[in-house]
Image (tube, rainbow, N blue to C red; front, top):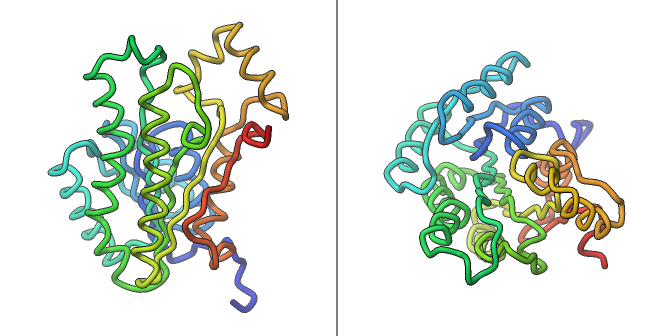
Length: 256
C-alpha cells in the first residue's frame, strides 16, 4: 500500500442512506473529510440537500438523492441516479433506520412492527440488491451495515427494532460470503446508546437515562462522530482483511 494513508478515501464514491442526521450525517461527513465524494440519501430532500451542501463546502462532490428505502421503485431510481453520478460505487453505508416504538410486545401494533421491519431490514436488503451491480463492477467495494447492540443482546420494549438489527447482522454475514468473490467486503457496526435525535426521548427521561448510564461501563452516551470513526476504519484499506464481522461501539455495554 506504499505511503498512502490507510484511511485515505480520495477518489472513492460513497452512498450513505439515512444521512440527513445523527450517525448517518456524521458518517457522510467523515467519509468526505477523508477524500470521498458522497451521495446523500434521506427520505426528505431538504435534509439530504443540507448535508450535501455541507460536504460540497469541504471541496468534495456531493449530491442529494431523496428516496424512501422501503419502496422498491424509489430504490431503483436511487440506483439509477447513483449510476449517473459515477460509473461505479466504492462504498455503501446502509444506515437508514427508525425506532418510533418503545413498548412491550403485547402493546406493539402489527402496523408498527411492519413499518420498522420495512425501513430497517427490508430497506437495507433493497438497497444492497439494487446497488450490487455498481459495487461489484470492480474489486474493492466496501459495504457497511449499521446494526446495533440491539442485534446482539435483548433490549426491553424494543422488540421490532431488536429483530431488525439481528436480521441486519445475518444479512451482513450472508453478503460477505456471497460478495467476497467480487472483492467486496461487508461488515457491520453495532452502536450502543448514542446521542442522536432517536435516543433523545430516552435521554430526556430521568429514570431511563439513569438506568442506561448505570449499565454503560464508560458511564456516558456515545457521540455520532465516535461511530463515524469506526465506520471510517471498516470502509478503509486499514480493514482490508476484515469482512463478515461486527464491531461494537458501545462504551462496554456488551462486555458485561
